[in-house]
Length: 474
Image 1 (cartoon, rainbow, N blue to C red):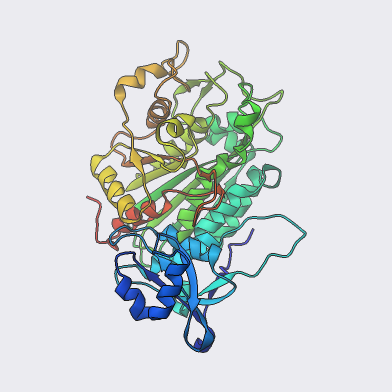
Image 2 (cartoon, rainbow, N blue to C red):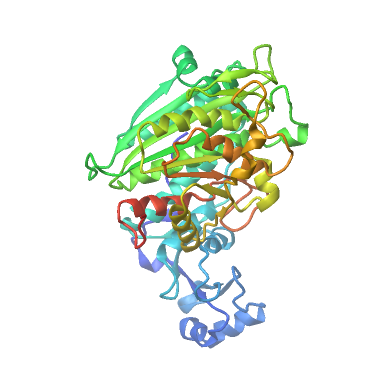
């Protein structure tokens, strides 16, 4: 699927055809009057407008043109998603948005584009016209628009039905997205995959749709040989039945999204490359399907991992950590400055933090602090949970080095992360994000369906590695 061209953005050449949105705050009525005049403000107030956050009202403008007032959050409360409401509520046409000086223009562009996102495979019914945000040619090529393209690409991947996106399809999409930006992309399969990634193969070979591993390498045009190396790893389970420990039908309903970690990593990599950051980049995606078949993995199987550790399969529905483990171990062989994996790994993380707050695990306090600061700055929340070593003993097996599930039905997100940590070097700076990758309902900028929470915070941290932020990793 091609990366979207953002039809919701327009580089206008005729200013006289534009309509204007004035973004205002509830406490600044005198500003409303200065912008649109007292009669228009009175009209808005008669319509119930009081600059409630995300509320839009159309009011009469000069020379019979329509204009609008739009409610902003309080000063200092950053929320780019609020501008997604404009893409929903404005009538068709070209619109320019005026905001107070403290509101970042990139937030307007990003929020509007994410609010305009739709996914549909319908062949009947013509979509109604949509509003378009007027931008400059430079803004259309800028960071906010590129971030929106990358996020919308990931959303498309996650939303695609599993019958249309199997492991080979996901690998093909990754190659098509990264090669035009200069990445060297290798797709590994068959006997080579079986030998190099035995845990991943043990999951993926249970399906008629054979597994793939995507391995991509890239260097920015300004990245020297000693430029920081960032390694990204994504869980790409294109559908998760649970295997022999099969999920109930309700739990299986959204399992096309179980490749959300790979989609997030792919979008993040695409953004890093499109922005030509002065870093070296490695990307690994484990593309598999977890199926029930005569050759699927069985409970109590024992498999020797790439790292040499033997793993007992305590539960075939804990497959994501098996997919990631060999990839993490291989990634560590290059000694990256930062190793990041993203996965829709555990329901326990959702039970603890809900759908909107990805769980963050990190083995380095300064890196975790930097991520927390980036998440707050970008209004892209992450919440750190502990790699509590006291639970490591729960992963013991009587016949193997490790079991892929804990012996107790508690702290599932933590024990899953502890399992992954066995495949990461002790001195390796490592970040693990356990994400839901889905919106259960539609909100401004976040329509129901696949999504990539955490991607903006992670991108800011990667920028910090090369000194292009005002925060730096130490």
